[in-house]
Image (cartoon, rainbow, N blue to C red):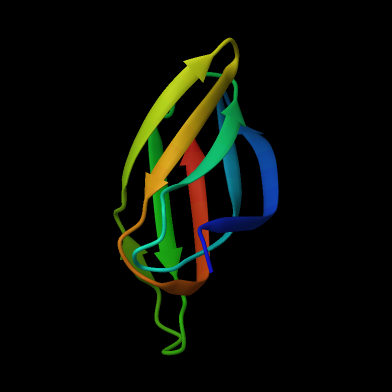
Length: 90
């Protein structure tokens, strides 16, 4: 399974925008992308709740590219995650 997002929701938190959702990835696959609107990325937090039921925070490397009001975040995941959640502040 390649990097994928589902249940993506876009919200505002005061003067910031947030994008949240679920994610999955497989170690060794190509980097994945997600587009967010409304400015540069401040932070991107990825967690997984894989089979153990314990929440683990992942700190994948990421980069961004901006075109107009859309920022594309490229996620360089490093391990397999089958049940992940993410929040991006932008």
